[in-house]
Image (cartoon, rainbow, N blue to C red; front, side, top):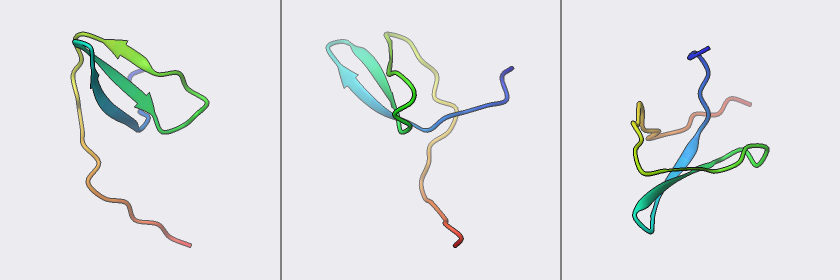
Amino acid sequence: DGENATLKRFYREKGQVRLQPANDDYDPIYSDNCHIKAVVIGLVRKF
């Protein structure tokens, strides 16, 4: 639907990119071409 996103960590490996999801329920994505739409620079938690 293009409206959902998940947090992934970015790794360069052997000439390609691995996007490792922070959520273990998802598998990593391997690609030689990707577009990063946002970068997380902080986290605010409310308890």
